[in-house]
Length: 177
Image (cartoon, rainbow, N blue to C red):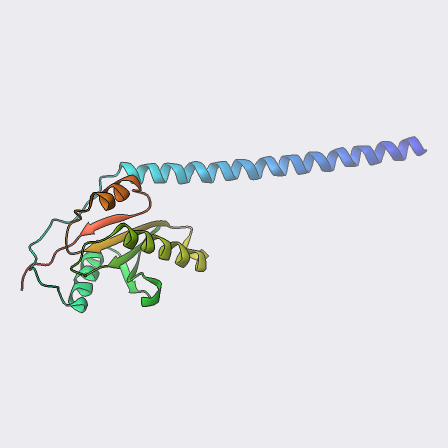
């Protein structure tokens, strides 16, 4: 009788172990599938030709910040994004959503040159914002730094070209009114 009970206990344990192993296998396969889909999506994004705006003429003096921000807002709204202004203290001026995309935009209207430090601070601000709002992390996220002048600092250009998944720089220029 004791051997029969021992046999039942051993069979039950083997059954439970097999269940746990098969469940873990399914979870691993689902995780691999999600990672594969994310990899394919990221690869397609990289291969997709980046449509940058055509440079327009700009005056030498600084554009009023409100005018420039509304110009940037209109540009991305016309591209199909629904924008909302972000809290100023986050370092992100606009958040834009379009289907499964989230764009985080920084409008820099300063006449001085953009520094690598400015770009890195913006990336860090975006990371903190996403960490505080985990519901946004399931979207394809783009960080876009917009300024009315092209970049000329080779260090900043090298940083942006070396990190295309982290940041996009767009030189959006307004025409003289």
